[in-house]
Every structure is written in structure tokens, then in C-alpha cells.
Amino acid sequence: MVGPMAVRSREGAGGRGRRLVRMRAGLVAAALLGLALLFALPSFRAAAQSFLDLFHAERIAPIAFDPRELASLPAPPSPDAIGRLTWTGGTRHAGLGVDEAKALLGTVPLFTIAADGWSAPGGFDVTEGARAVFVLDRARFESYLRSAGWADARLPAAFDGATFVAEIPAVVTSRWADGEGGTVELLQGATPRVEAPAGVDVEILRQIALAAPGLPPELRSELGAIRDWRQVLPVPVPKGAEAEHVSLAGAVDAVLVADAAGGRTALVWIEPSGAVLGLLGEGVGGEALLALVSSVQPAK
Image (cartoon, rainbow, N blue to C red; front, side):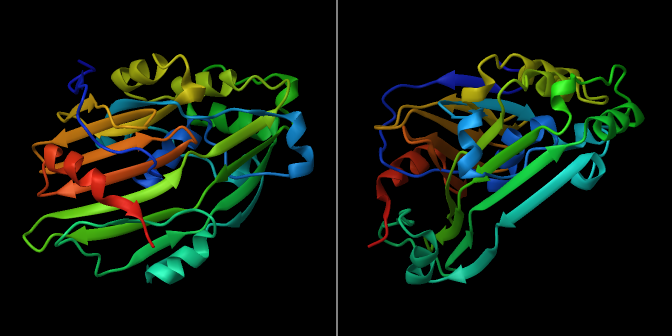
């Protein structure tokens, strides 16, 4: 039991490998990038050799989460208040047809649900891959921390002018209906790549995030317990919901979430390549979601 959220493990649930995955692009990206409040998107290829790759998700960690409990957290600073941010990409295109979506994705497969009775009348929403570079101003960041209530707001000198880069691949969402009241949202993407200069201890930023004033103690404990955080994809789970690890053929890790109170289910998994795929269901139970996975296939 993790707080009020039950986490179980189930073997032999059946399923499918070779699937790109992503659950709730905004939540997942926030979970990965938000822990330091200042990561954005990637990178100077020429300088990449001097950077340390921070994230490569290898497992999923369900995290009990209630947005109402975060109301007392200090407002995050604007990037310009603590450094300099350069952002490119991330354009969103809504209601695309299969061919249009495939053209935007290039070599990345576009996934659909090839099951009898299921259709996506609204088409595909594609958010193009984005890249950003953030240069930290240590003095301004420390000033923000002090004003927001951090008791000890000091960073090593190596952080002054440190450049953090990150890359978020394209994200695709599509909403499918079975004609009988059941709906499923299919999300596909990949884990972000975040890099920091060699010699900068990013664990310090993680500890700053965990010490945020107003962070609920239970959430602080759950996040702090993730020791191998560079290899973990945190997935926010509504409090009171049940999350269980399930076995999907070819997947590195997979988690099924059932929120009985909200009438929703979700299945998210990670591929060996780092790709992520998610199915979010309304009026569709967990077993039905697991059965539907075999119909999630690349568009022809």
C-alpha cells in the first residue's frame, strides 16, 4: 500500500510488445521535468559530449496525487526570472487525418486501434517535438528560493551559468469510441531526454524540489523514496485508485490504474527503446483495456 493508493503486481495479464507509449503528456512531462522547476528542452549536438544524460525511464512508479493538496506550494518562477530559456518546436496540430499525422511524425510510427467497432472521428492531435536550452542564473534562482520560503537557499558555484538541455519527442493523442458508450484515449510519445553539464550535481536540485514549502509530507515521502529516479517514470494516480504492475509482452514495465470513484481506467507502459504508450478508458474496465492492447497497431 502506498499511502491510500494500493499497488499490486500481476503476472500473465497478456498484452503486446512493440508499442510506443505515453500517458497524459502534460502530467508525465511535468513529473520528469518539474522536479527542478527549470528544465525545458534539447540540445546543441556539438556540445552533447560534455553533458550527462539524466533520464532513461526503465520502470514506472505510481504516485498518489491530489492536485488540491498542492495549493499551498509556492508559484514556480518564470524562466526569465531565474535564467535564460530558449525554446523551439512544440507546435500543436489538431484533428489531423492519418496521412497528415504520419507526415508530421516522420519515421516514428503512428498508432491506431484496429478493433471492430472502434473509430476516432476526431482524428489525431499531434504536438511536434520540442527542444529548449536553459541557462541558470544562480543568484537569481537563490533569490527566488529565499522569497518562496526555502530555509537554506544556496547552490554550489558550478551552477552559475550551468546549461540544462532537454528534448521531448512528439506526442500524439486520439480519442476512440466503440459505439456503445465506451471511449478510450490513445496517447503515444517517448520519455524526455534531459541533460546537465558534467560536474553539476543534479541531486541538489532534486533535494531542493523535495524540500519545497507546502509539499504534502506523504507526497514528499513517496517521491523521496524513488532512489533510482533517473530511471523512473512517475505516473500520477488519483488518491483512492488502485495501481498494479502488469505483464505485457515486450514491455519493460507496465501499470494498470483503476479509479472506481471516477469510473476511469488507464494503462501505461515503457518499451526497451524508451518509448511510452498509454490507453485511458471511460466506461471501459481494466480487463477490457488489457484486451484492447492487442489491437493497438501502427497505421498502414
